[in-house]
Length: 157
Image (cartoon, rainbow, N blue to C red; front, side, top):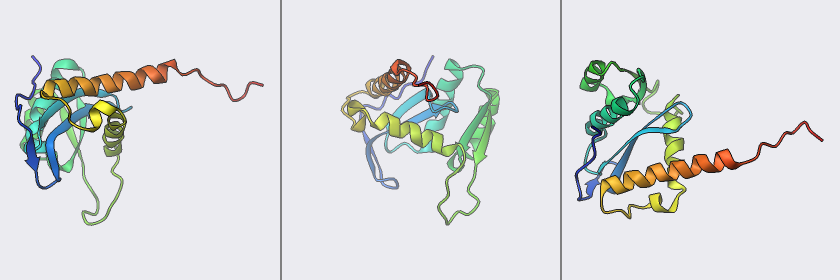
């Protein structure tokens, strides 16, 4: 059984300056979503990781290695081990300097793809499950456009 956020009320996250809801996604190495969880903005990222991993476990049982940000260190790795998953933390080498973290940009790129669609730019939906459906719909539209594009061969004249 997949976990869905039941919070109908949007929240506020002062640290990230987010008002409304947050999207939590698990993607594959190409950036395609495997699991999505929508929570109130007041829910911490660490708190939404368990439902996200549970949805990932239910939908993709063969996933064993998960790359995650440093915020997910702690008890989550032990809990993921019970699901037969290994969490590999991508840590910064210099915490006071900007650097592009390996594997992290894949998730950020997926968020950018999702934000290109009108219904996912803002939170128009009343229910978190509806917003989750809009995210999946946006990714289906993206993949449909990519599959429909003809391949241009550069070496043919």
